[in-house]
Each structure stands twice: as C-alpha cells, then as structure tokens.
Image: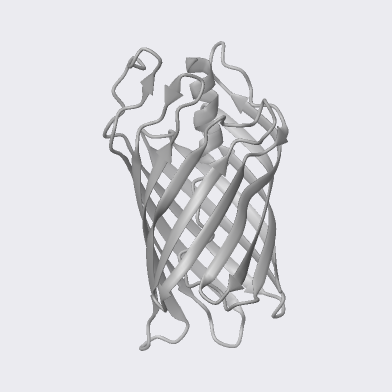
Amino acid sequence: MFKKIALATALIATASFATWDYFPVQEAGRGQAEAGLYYDWDNDWSQSGLKVGARYALIQNLELSIQNFGYQFWSEVDCKGCPNGGDGLRDLTLGVRYQIDPRINAFLDVNLPIGSDEVTSDEVALYLGGQFSMEIPEAPGLAFGTEAGLDWGFEHNNYERGLEIHVGGEMDYTIPDIGLTPYLGLQFKFQLTESTSEDGDIGWDDAGDNQINIWLGAAYAIDPMITVKAQLIVRSGDMDGDATGLYAAADFNF
C-alpha cells in the first residue's frame, strides 16, 4: 500500500491548480480551450506529459470546465521497490464556478480517477470554496485574485488522505498595447486531519503537514482568439514533497 501512496503523491502534485483561475467567470456564451506540456522533477521523482482542458460559460455567471486531463508520457519514482508511474491517460477534473457578484465566485471541482492503471491516483476528491478578485483602478491593467478552498479525498485502496485547506492568490499585470501579461502567484496548503489506512494508522502522523506553491509566468495574446503562456512552478514543504515544474500552453478563446 505504501508503494502506491508514494506513486499517488507524485501524481497529485501535478494537479496543484484545481480551479481554472482565480478571476471572474466569463460572459455567457464564451469559452476557452487549452493544451500544454508539463515537466515536473525533484530529487525523488520526475514526470512529463500533456494537459488539456476547456471551459464554457453556459449561462450568465455559470461556468463549467474540464481540467487536468491529458496524457502522461512517462514518470519515474526513485524509491526502492516503488513502481514507476509509466504512461497513459490522466485523471479528469470536472469543475463548476458560479459568480455571486462581479468580485466573488463559489466553486466546486471533482477529481475522477479515470486514468490508466499506471497513471491514475485512484482517488475521487472534492475541492470546494470561494474566490475574490478585483482590478486596481489606480493601476490600469493590474488585477489580483484570491482563493480559499477545502480539499477532501475519499477512501481508496484502504487509504484515505487527510482533509486539506488551500489558500492562494495571484497578481496579473497586462502591459497596455502589447498584449503581454506577466503574473505571479502563491498557494499555501495545510493538512487539517491525519491520513488513515485500513487499520486506522498509516505509520506516521501527517496532520499539520504543509506546502507552499509559487509560480511565475507570462501570457501573450497573439490575437483576440489565441494566447500562449509559460510558467515556472516551485513547490516546497512536507506535503507532496519539494518539486520544480515547467508548463507551456496555448489557449484558444471562442
């Protein structure tokens, strides 16, 4: 079981950003599709693959999304006796966001473990919470968004991950007349309860574990329909371990 936990830890790390973003829901009838390549590594594991997703504002203030789906090219875990992640389809996250007012969103994301046997986390999980965002009137082009959510993973393979709280924020600045938007974000995770196994104890107390995610990136609008972006992600803490990630993607707006 613990070999499976070690592998699932590496897989969960690639889904650190569950909601689509921290900013307001698009207008009704508008949508966006994204495809990008990722590469994550640290001292114990590395992995690479393709992530795809799409979102669509079905009616005013209501947005539906598909996230974190795609294909993992390979994964390696430096752990004696631990299996490598291999390749195959990734798990799928379905999301819904509702804009309560122009600055406040409520959200719910559901992770569905539909991925290939060597890639799936085997975990059904819920991530729910709220977001607050606003533009800065004194600085045209500058906006920030924040999020707080609860991450609840259900029991699987006689193992249940502890309840987590996530708090994050991002600052974006769109440079006038250029179409370039640098951005900087931070997310803090804290595990509220201890993970358990079939006998009620996993062998260590992970309640209180935490992690900090920091990302720096830039997006460039080639035209109103196509945007390209790249970002560097750094993770540190005793939850999911330390890791560095690269992600480059293209967005199609419709």
